[in-house]
Amino acid sequence: MNTNLRRAISTAALAALAFPALAACGGSDDSGGAADGKDKTVTLVSHNSFAASDEVLKQFTRQTGYKVNVLKGGDAGQAVNQAILSKSHAQGDVFFGVDNTLLSRALDNGIFAPYEAKGLERVPRKLQADAGEHRVTPVDTGDICVNYDRAYFADHKLAPPQTLDDLVKPEYKNLLVTENVATSSPGLAFQLATAAKYGDDGWQDYWKKLKANGVEVVDGWEQAYNERFSGSAGGKKAKGDKPLVVSYASSPPAEVMGVKPQPAEAPTGVATGTCFQQTEFAGLLKGAKNPEGGKALIDFLLSRTFQEDMPLQMFVKPANQDAKLPELFTKYGAQVNEPGTLAPEKIAKNRDQWVKAWSSLVLK
Image 1: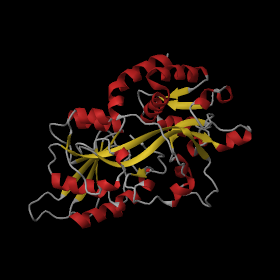
Image 2: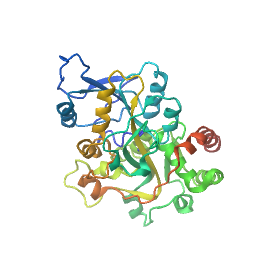
Image 3: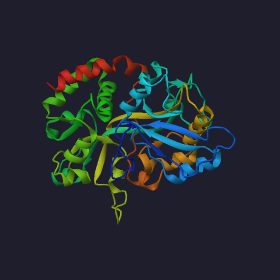
Image 4: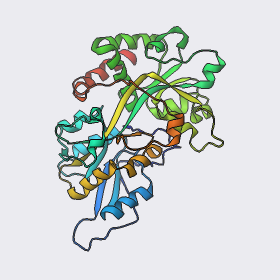
């Protein structure tokens, strides 16, 4: 999901700002005051793709008295690493944005304090990766999937691929661009999708076939989606010539957001048999200066108010099953019924060696 999710789905669709190193931004105009001697600011540490509407953050302030201060620290991997390096002097009170591909790294380094959030009973058990200890709380979920350019496949009278098996067929030779597994969250998630599908041994044989079928690898999502992919608005402008790209199941809604009149369907589609599920978590940081404010913020992140605001802010789906999706998602988004998944402990055990093996196999 960006992550690590995060994970910016579209720089035009997301209002998140890119900050060098770690940057701060106030999330509410209501100071909440400090006349009672208590800290009335709660600090949320996250990746650059975190976004929430001003009105929603102001509602949190009205409900609790706490003003939200947001510290953004690069992509999800950078933000997690920085949280680990600074764990003896926590940067804030809550960390949001560690996903299931990086979760074990954060848990093993002990950066979170246990807290069982209010409203957790409305989150499906399968998303609760740390249910026994409650060091993290699931906040959102999404799927990394191959997207396709509808116009290309219509013009070439070719059915778009739907599964991982399809991608190695001759008719799709030289059509796919993906991200470097070592440098990109979507790239890593796509590799994990192949590991989930073909197993510890079979995924390497699959990538040999994919390489032989002309897969192109670029450093990151921005280059893949907005430069090389022919189906995105950015890719069209850049004259991208790849009609298949590793992106998100929520990319099609992002492509039509703000477009008037609204089209009957998005210009891009999703190959739903290629997906890997990402879940993003929030956790109370050990050593938080304002743990009570942090707990209140985690509760709020699970509330319908925040959860229903989130899809059009970060293009992810709510973890709270009571939250309703906006029409843009229900009309243009893809329904992924059986995404690939791997247990966080399996990812932790194999991630580094898989990345090395993939790099040796695909990049040489």
